[in-house]
Amino acid sequence: MRDIVLRMGLLEEFNEEETQEVLERLLETWVQINEIWWRAHPEAPPLYTWGVNYEREAKGTPETWVCAPMIRRQKYHIDCDDWAPARAGELRARLDEPARVILPMRKVRGADGKIKRLYHVQVERADGRIEDPSKVLGMGLELPSDPDERRAAIVLRLADSGHQRTRDLILGFDAQARAGDPAAEKFMRLLARVARRERDA
Image (cartoon, rainbow, N blue to C red; front, side):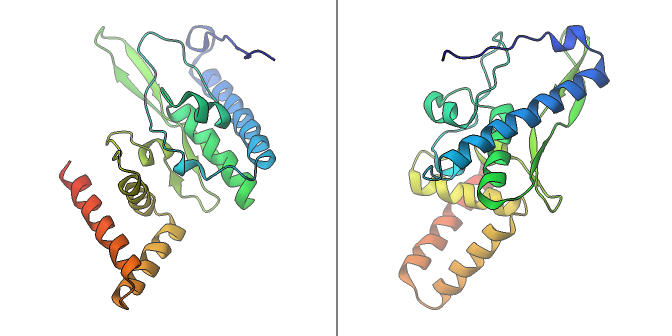
């Protein structure tokens, strides 16, 4: 089957409240589609290990949403409306966690003087924490190209966002390093190096 394209002039055809409702319904459907894919592909590696960075779509192009398998194929121009539904779907499928996407909106004045609405899609975890896959994967700060440093940067960003399992992982490695485990010592040195680099960026 060929790609399915849905064309909607949201900002022109709906008012602010209607636009918000339409986007929320579409994104929830997108999460469910991603969840189906994750359940059908238990062999797929975790989303954050795919080696694909956050990247805004090119200016002047239509807003395009891609689901998890397309993220792996396309690799470029993957932004918040792709990452958040894919991550929420992964959490539902793999952890049975009722994560959902949220759509904060803020208004800014454009160069033409008109007020514009800006949306940023994020993940709300079951305990109420907000996880921002776009930030984890490079929004605002590029990820290192070295695979080990990239993984370390992702671990740090997840920990900074309040991801308790990641924080526990770091504490465990720290304890092992203090006990003299060479691999844990190497990992903690890597974390410290990447943390310094991100702090100074």
